[in-house]
Image (cartoon, rainbow, N blue to C red; front, side, top):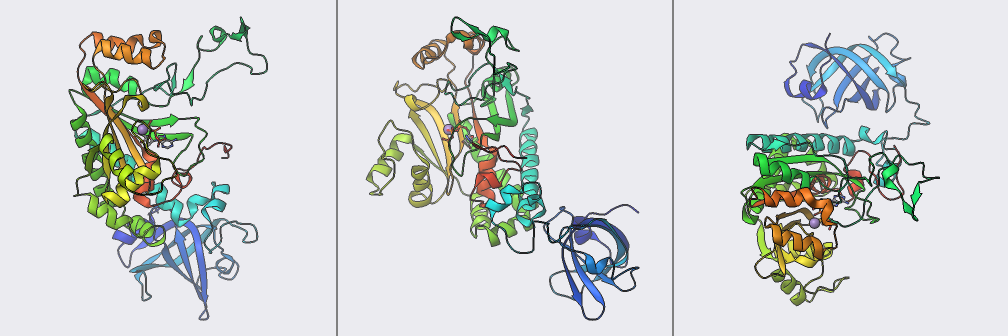
Length: 463
Ligand code: ATP
Ligand code: MN
């Protein structure tokens, strides 16, 4: 008999029909009348299936009465209406097979609530909890929705490289990739001789697929990448990972306004999808993690985001009278406390800031006529701050060259990037959405380490 998933059984199971179900026991409760209730979960949805087992089952005492949280089971039984509260149907077991026991003396997941800190130390078992099951299902649904959004709009999915020779932003924070034996690295004239290394030059893990996406946008129009991204920033915050996933659309014949319009349409689409397809997982987050998540998403699907310039934002922050940890002045980068103030206190909604000083943004952003600011945009949301960073790209050859020199970068490394401005250059724009920050926002989860299956952070590489 084919195995049916609990999700399908709960939504479409026919009473009176026999089914085979597999999963892991969450709890067992025995009744004096010689039968037991077992809550079974198979990960297909938040809800458990209630199983009823009685003495008709062969070896009821030796198996059913020994079942504990964490055991894996296969059962066959008939679906029947449930007289009890909390579920429409339950499965009356006729046959039961235990695949694997879980010794309650040693199994770390017990019925009580565990702290997220503790669960991080058992990342091999935490997906069996309600929270991490819900996070995994939500990540899956949002990934699917991301592809659907772009595919429906004719964007091509481009697979940009993970190993690169260029540092996208010239900003450092790179993980180096090498096959050198680090105990005896070849040296020439006092410096590491990378000509002997695998690629014959220094190599690193990508910090962004943008530059390569630009190549394809300037040939195919609208493209996107969605892949892992690596940053060796030593920041132990609740919003930074060393390995995270980024969605990066890049559009030819598009300016900053078009870029912002797409970002808003994109986020609203994703919010609508999760509200429709992840209802019970969202209800869980809304109940146990953050009681505002559903309300916030429902508001945002129809509410436009506030748009203003960096300069206007700095004015608002300077006049706010708020005692910030980091002082605000025109020309300094905004910290998340500032970003959050604008979203949570000033506007009470997501905010898009534009036209940042060129000194705090990468070389590739298009210079404004004022010569001081660039066509950048950051999308900021309550509780987190920045979730999207984007810009219109510099499409003028001479200006780009100047900006590269100003930024102290080696022009030779960017010959191909400059070429795109020599041959058929066109206005184009794009952005990067941090996937885990988005998942944090949707779920209300406080720490980014708890919205990715296996977080990589400074000093942490378990699992
Ligand atoms: P921040 O200032 O918050 O460190 P950033 O300006 O360095 O971010 P970008 O280079 O603009 O980030 O990257 C685009 C998006 O990628 C960000 O808006 C954010 O959502 C996400 N992101 C950046 N760094 C990280 C990180 N270390 N961990 C998780 N997500 C990140
Ligand atoms: Mn940014």
